[in-house]
Every structure is written in structure tokens, then in C-alpha cells.
Length: 450
Image 1 (cartoon, rainbow, N blue to C red):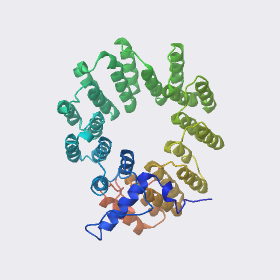
Image 2: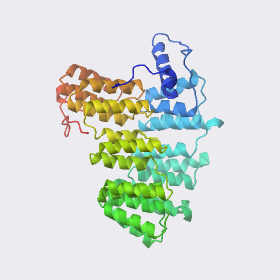
Image 3: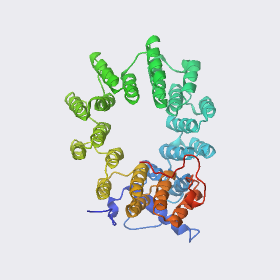
Image 4: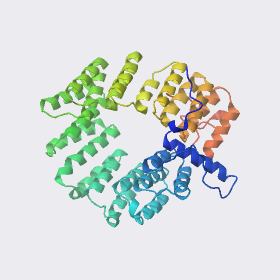
């Protein structure tokens, strides 16, 4: 069994990782030389395109200072000309840490450069970051200022409504819609109502969902495929998968042509109400009708199989999706990781995941650290932690807390304190732990939940 390859051929390392490695080399060199030149390696071939830089920035999404340093470094030391896409990614990271002043500084720089002008995505990001910070007034005020960017129109208004609903400010979204419905044409009314319906879904207010669904009928709002897909999801998550299946059958009777999103919801609903075998039947039906399954379809079935303890069939479905030309993603692997109970099998599967070119997400690392920590296996905990750092994934507070919990459980208090201090230095919130010298707060039992 292979437990993480120690040496990987350089050309097999994805460009973002090679770019990060060069940046880290430069950063380490700058600590000893105040004016270092760009590190050169005859075997390194870096491709500086927007996609590569955006993915590299994503590796520092939990450390905005390092992300901003990298953002400036790749421009000043590598001659990369930032695009709208790379500016937007940096603005998104800054917004995550409520650094809105810095975000606006970047927007002002963008406005002065014809090759990186702010676009709808720029302000969609800003809407979402303001609203996620519960700065609803600031988000609405920003919409009013979009005249200066020639972007105050129906698209931006819908983006604002969508952001409000996405982050559970549905009441404000509905009030804004009532006051400003003239901002949207008749053809977009269904779209806005779908956003609000999805917002009530996110809040889990099932009664309000039903009320709004019936209100759409009373107002004569046309319900489209998206409307039905959202309401099927509502019935499913509201604990009524059988009603979701009835909606699916109603759509079929009405002659609505289902897309892969609607089928995915139906596959999930029928799996919950009637079992995974019925999900597989529906999957075969959609294939026969010419609707190509996507990664969500396979993930849904794999998850249902795993939850029913049918791991061999889950592995078979994983193989089948590859044979059908559908590449598994990190969620595919996470579905299986959650149900694996043998440490060696987890490490083997993690190794296969990386070999197959699927980059583990931070939630993958945290899940595995928690699993191994809970079982008292520190060696695999550090294997996973080191692999996380090797792949350029910046740990967040969940990752640090999972590692510290594992160390405390094994009585390694001094090392736990080291990581506790390290995360505090990064501005991350440490969990209160009595053993580390702080009184545990309400609800801080120190238990690690999977």
C-alpha cells in the first residue's frame, strides 16, 4: 500500500502548486535577502494565466495577508498582468475577512485599467460579502452607486436579491422586491420569485415556503423548471420526500422536460423515500431519455449507497462514472470518506484521490484529521496535515481545532499549545480548552464531531 508519494515528478505537479512553490521559495529567500531576485529553476515551467493565478490564490483563501502578498508578488516579480478574474478572486478573499476598504482600493485600480475593468461578477462578489457580514444597508447603497460603473441595471438588481436570499436575508429581499419591482422586466419575475423561494428554503421555514409557493399561483407567476426543482428540494429537505416524488410525477404529466438538476433532486428524493435501488432505476431512466448524468447525479447515488453500507457498489459506481467520462470531484470522495471506518483503507483511498488528480478540499482534510484524532491515531493525523501544507492549502480554524483536539486527547499538551498560539497569531479563533489554560466556554465540551 502506498501512503502518500514522497517524490512527485515536477511535470505532474499542477501549475498552481508549482507557482505556489516558487512563491514560497521567494518568500523564504526574502527573509535573508532584502532584495531577492525571482528564484530560478531550470526544471520549472510556470504558466501564468488567470486560471493558474486564481487557483493559487484560492490556496490562501484563509490567510488574506498572504493572499494579498502573493497577489502583489506575482505581478511585481513575475510580470503577470492581473485580469478582472484575478482581481475578483482577490476581492472575494478580502471580503471574506471584511476588508472592504482594501476591496474598494482594488476596484479603483481596476477602473483605471482597460484590461481589468470591474464587471457584474465583481459587484456580485461584493454584494455577497457585504450581505454575508450582515451589512445589508451597505449592499443596497452599493447598488445605488453602480451608475458610476454603468452597471446599475436588471442584472445587478437580481444579483443583489440573490445575495440577500443566499445569506438568509430573505425578509429584506422580499421588501426590496416589493419597493423596486420596476427594476425588473416581466420575463424576470419568475427568476426573482425563484430566488426568494430558494431563500426560504435556506432558512428552513417550510411553512413560509408553502405559503410563498401558493402565493406564486395567486399572483399568476409562471412556474418554470427551476421553480419545481427548488420546491422538490424543499419537500425533500423538509422531511417529505414522497411529496417531492409526487411533484416529479406532476412535472412529467405536464410535459415539462426535465434537466439534469431536476432529475438529481428526484433521484435524491426517491432514494430517501423508496430506497437507493429506486434511485438507480431513475438514473437509468434519465440515461435512456437522453439526459446525461453529471457528477451530482453520481455523488447522490454514491452517498445513498454508502449510507446503506453498500461500499462495494459505491466503489463500482465510482468506477462507472469514470468510464462514462464523468470525472469525480472532491464531494465524490468525501461521500465515501465519511463512511469508511478502517484507517488503512482511508489512507489508501486518499492516496488514490490525489493520484487521480482530485485536489482535496479543506473540509476533506478536517474530516480526516477529526476521524483519526477521534480514533487516537496521531501518525495519520500528521500525514494528512503535512499533505495539506504540501498542497498549499492554508488551514483555517476548523483544521487547527481538529489537530489540537487530537493532540490534547493524546496528552500532548505542549505541542497543542504551540498550534494554539500559531492559529492565534494568524487571527483565527481558538476553541476554549481548560487543559490549555483557558476556561471552556458554554458549549465547548472539546468533543470532536464528524
